[in-house]
Image 1 (cartoon, helix red, strand yellow):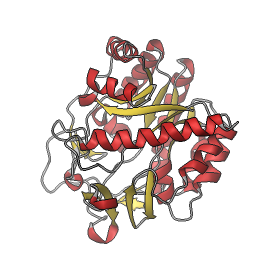
Image 2 (tube, one colour):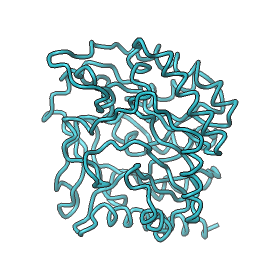
Image 3 (spheres, rainbow, N blue to C red):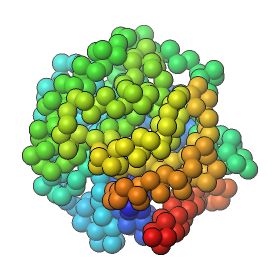
Image 4 (cartoon, rainbow, N blue to C red):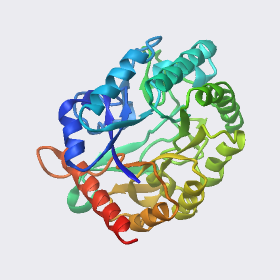
Length: 356
């Protein structure tokens, strides 16, 4: 097991690489597009109106850009383990089955080739139209820590998605009164299968793993579009599409715990044994849909020590990152929250490793 930290583009810098190393992390999972407004590394509180906008159509991540980032990270004694999430402007018509789909697929293939050439082994993705939506943020955590909350009774989960937006990001100007039409689960599975049919051979050829994130919030439908990975049965269907070693999971413990009837431990055990997990979001929650809140790593419904023992028993060698965590009441609330989570993870991993 390896300890990592996830960083958005605006905070992929020297100070945060040093912070990661100081907290004991050895690996970085990088997001190369910012899903927030402003320069605060914490998630925006205005989730319902979208995370921001991206206008990077046709501007795929080049080999030189990826190699430069990798070398910068390595200069701080860290390893770039994965890129998390395609830029929505790179693949909105892949998700929407729109007129630019084939062109955008070629761009995504180029990204995989560039990653393979640069030696970046994992590409995380989230195949969803609504994306992460419906969260609110406020002092709902332990001792009033600022935390993410989902309460389906307080949001209109049937609100349609405006045209020009996908994955809760705007890629072109809004067209008032125009919305994405409803999409069935059958249609969404067909789109995912088409995506993987074209992408997995390129991933295999270039030594890159494509790993899928489950739906958060894990509801069967949101904003009039079906969700693919809203329960564990649907999530494991992904592996039936292809047995390729390049086809796997981005295992988000918090999201899986949020699913009704889920068993995080059995799923973690099964797929860590089978080496189908690319990397892990080591995140804790309290409650399940339709109402849950994110929790500090030591207080949620998941026994995180039990989870680590399962991974240790199965010789899991991948990276675990905190993903996100409640903020703490300091002038550096995001950094303090992350330091708390990383410290817990580092100590627990050392204890488990020393108990052999």
